[in-house]
Image 1 (tube, rainbow, N blue to C red):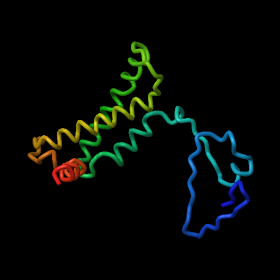
Image 2: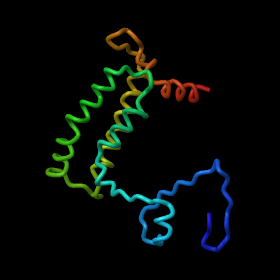
Image 3: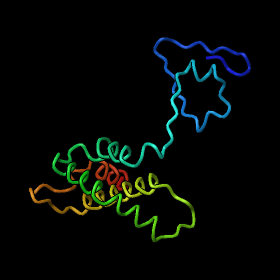
Length: 145
C-alpha cells in the first residue's frame, strides 16, 4: 500500500484491504484500475437487496423456513405499495430514500420480533417464542446481571 506521503506499507499474503468510498471524486485513474473498483448507485440496487440480506442474516437462525418465506412474501407484497403511498400522499421534513425507509421497517420488524420473544407467549406449534431469538435472551441476561 502506497500512501500519499510516499510511504509504503508492506502487506502480507494474508492481508486484504477493502475500501468503501462515498465517491471517486479524488481517485486517480491509476487507483481505479489497480483496485478494480466498481461503483453502484444505491438507487440502482433497490430495497430488495437489503430485504434479502435481512432475511438471510438478521432473522434468528432458529426461525423456521416457512416463517422466513412468509416474511419475504409480506415484504414483497406490501413494501412497494407503501412506498408509493408515502411518495404520493406524505410530506417529509427531511428527504428519505426508499432504501432507508425499508431499512427502518426492517429494524421495527426486528423490535416487534424481540417483543414477541420476550413476552413468553407460544406459537401454534407450542414452542415459546423466546426460543426463536437468542439475541433477546442474551440482552435480558445482560440487563439482569
